[in-house]
Image (tube, rainbow over the protein chains, first blue to last red):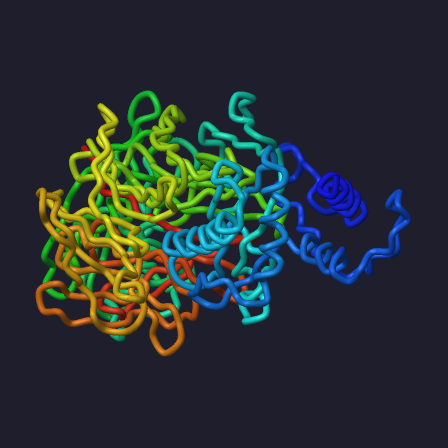
Length: 173
Length: 435
């Protein structure tokens, strides 16, 4: 009973925050992630039981709205600030075993292109392992590396490069 | 020109049967030799009716000037316009400070055929160095003229000319994230660009087959990386590797029977493999937890050079293909050496190297072990040798735009090829055409 309630809560949370909504592959694959919704405060909501969302639930929603993980230069270590984000995604995916998550790894433009494909893949694999360690099924996850071929930001400075060293989590069925 | 069969998963892939590309490239010489050879290339005679169908001399002058090794004389400065060797007044050309003079005629034949008749004369001693006839057709006048430039260049420098060759590169238009990728094949001087493939998803890593007839490349058109080969004459395309994970960095073996490539398989670990193109037999070459990628064949086909970060940062390694051969590290200077390419004679390795905080093109003499940096950009990448081994073409940036540049292997001559708009990158120089 408790579990069912939790899933209902989560489901409504996703709807409200515009978070993991199954999207077909035909939708623009390069659509920007829903990072922006992390900024919009989660209003109190009608959950049937009329509960107020506690701070933990709000944190969960913020975590789920974050679907881009950024990395340091030439590095695939997941920064501590993303642990909770990934824990929430892992839990969501684990409780929705039919849900598929595509992990798109990217690198900044410096250096050679195929080596950067390798760096993007290494980052996507780091996120994959983090999700699997927390219960996401292997079959739910697929990785792809775009290297430097699909930057989020154009420009050749550290600000653009930092935005481009990333893994995007793309939900779909 | 769009094929409905190639529309996959919401992305549009298009194999164009060599439609003309919009963007033509322009050449700018950014650095030349200090003492270029003065040469007069006199406008060719035309024995046919009306205006000559092609200005052979103008193309010869452009080719020679673009090499950075010659200063062709301006036409306006010529006081006579001989078209045959016996009409060349040696004293006059000597007074005009030329070392050599080229004269010739374009002669019409039957059914759109032509003969380019030309002579190369040393005006200091009157010696006739070349006296040739180059056949052509209406369609091949430009290519035939490039071959004449090749002959002149070789006679005067001792280096086989590479003007009558082609390059392939990737062109990108549009703003992030809505961009269009094109794989383009053009003459080595950037003329006659033709679109070989087009996609809204990335295209990358073009590689020429040894006969210069087929390109292998990576396409993300199905939202994952796959390797295709495409026969340029017909546009016929084969998907040769679409395994789980990365399919990247294709490189043809010298016998054209195999492709070296990078696969990550399901576990995401990039290693080098060799794929037999006939029977699709896959042989694993490296097995290491680091990133192993960017393989390139030695000219004898017995070993591969590749990038690996197994030591903690990317360096170049070499591995023999005999069973049990273990990779040997080749580069030791600096913290970043990647994407090796071998000169046609196998003596020199070109690579992307981190030099004073910038990514530049470096060369390593494999016999002496001496290394040097040839370029001065911040984001130089993708070096590719001309088939004569004398020049490298590579990708660089100019005011935020991707452009192509060439540098002679001794670093003395540099030039730049820019499109009118958009980014161009990943140039690969085709081999010499097979006769």
